Image (cartoon, rainbow, N blue to C red; front, side, top):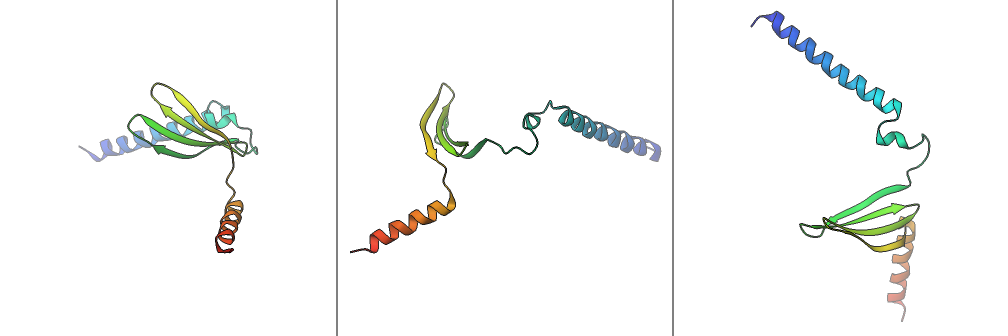
Length: 108
């Protein structure tokens, strides 16, 4: 193959990659992407905090919505809400709970 063929291939590849980047930018700006559903500057209300595979068919998922946590058991057949309204675990609150429990253990 000649050098011209290689250059033509490289230019075509760069052109196609550029079109992909441009199309992605247009889709995000037009609001078709899921990330575009949020208004700019607003905090997210829903987060997946942890996920744990229990067995091959079941998964526990801890989600947070508006500073409340919900534990959900997901499976192929059905989903089950295990616990709801768990207060959000703030690291400072957790440290205070640990200190309080240590004080109770050392008290006579």
